[in-house]
Length: 415
Image (cartoon, rainbow, N blue to C red):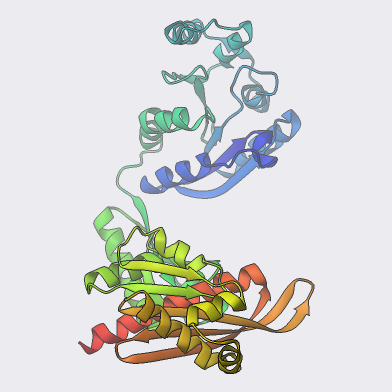
């Protein structure tokens, strides 16, 4: 069973509001075995609204609209749907009574414009709204159903749970099929490189299906399964997950909402270890990520944005500092070792970067050095990264954290 969502409101197109309704509705549809095939956003323009609604009902048996059923002149959803189906708007006295009662309960005086909300297309099934003054409605046709509900999130959620989902399950005889998904999170390679390792699974599998989504330094691999029950869907996902893990190995660092820094904090806690960080290039990004975990295993972070702060941290004379900095690797090692000693932690992580060349307007090629001081010695990595500074700093932070993660993988596997 396929469905579409139409989010209505010029404020969405102007960026004044973020459309959280569509993601909520999409999740609830998937949990009930209904496949969402398209979402559309349209402003408060009657001709455009009619065009979008007409196209949607010709494509999909289930169309859900949110927004545009308020009392103001630019709330035009009811008018658009009525005109598409060539139905007059009819006044519903019982809806009017409910709206008036809600105003009375809340201690407000109802404006005359709120009468507009008691009108729905002739023959439509009203959706009573005890949470607000905007009743919804359902128009059925030979193609399926279009369901119009408010755009106010608490009202939308209440009506989805108590009216829309029960209606859809009954109307379209949706019994047991469910859609489940699981997200594997990976880092260490770009989206194209990871995609090339699992491209046959992405192309050749329809149930479960496999897709990727990239963000800065983080690749998400989504596995989606349709089945008659949750157990069967979980089994399908598990089988595909094993295939992907076999190919990507340690590139995968977590699942679903897990984060790289969160998993590192948990690993540190598990082994009762502590970590300190020195950042001369990433400007506190690593410390900020680790701080957000609220883990006591991250004890201190130092941001050293200038050579004078670096020299003071290392407690070196100007001559000693200049000599040391000529060797980027030794400089990174010294920072990591000093962090471990100064802050008395089990691990000291240092990130150092320097611009090698300017590549274009606002873009640079940067040598980045990563050093991790442990009781076993010091490990180093070096990468040349390119792009805008904010982008390179974020990538460098991910690389540094991934270095710590892979160290823990090695020591746990050898234990």
